[in-house]
Length: 377
Image (tube, rainbow, N blue to C red):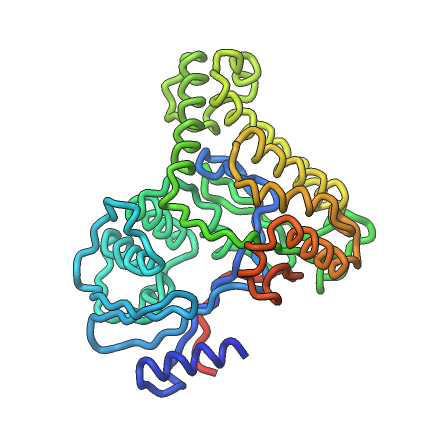
């Protein structure tokens, strides 16, 4: 149904035949373990869900891009033959900046864009007959966010969206940019048949809207991680690039006392999270949802206490989720858990919740697949 709505809207905007409309299906992703360590070269876990963004587009014969959002107001126009430059004032970043960033990334990678579409990287590549691998697109996305938008993040998001496989948990080594996949309970004697996984994913919305590139806090924490790495590497006589993945865990244990309070917390989050990823891989392979859930909860706690991220509202939501029935590995109680979380969060934040459509406050999701371009039906 949503696919038909997107196609209809593109036809109305472009005046083209519905059979010409193409759609990028870009899923949302979750990160069960490995939070906030991708920018330090850590190993992260990822999985997509069966909700996401649909980007409808049609090729055109000129260089103009016409963008319209189903969520944000207004129509944006720009040309792909205009040279895109990095945004200097992050206060100017809006939803359409990501589309301009896609043009910037492709231009700076030597690609000649002569045709356009109403979408981002995958759409631009599709209409310009460019064939790029998922790994290439991960690096292009990194260029958009690091160089064009000025956000010092890692490769977790594009890796999850472009590399996920249905039924598998993706483990991405952000130092080597190499993925590996583990099927749920593949080591268990009672392994589930390769069909629908025996769990649900509960997605709860806080009601907060947050433009990450505009936030100083994110880049500050990345900087603090690098400073912690720099101090630890210097103490061990190493001149490696200052990321925490370069620090041997033994060196960290021996030298962590030299770090000031903030840097010590950032380093503790990184090294403890790496341990949780290893344990989580084993729990997932055994099909042990209970242990996996406990590790995920510990990851959330470390993100709050050691990485010091998350607003008051997000922390409230985290605490509510911990108390919800059926969370942490229990099965067949997804709807009960969703109802509990929705009611408790509304009691805590009635004003925020009132702004969220009732059918979008808490979602019960299934695992998804990777992003893809859908041609005409």
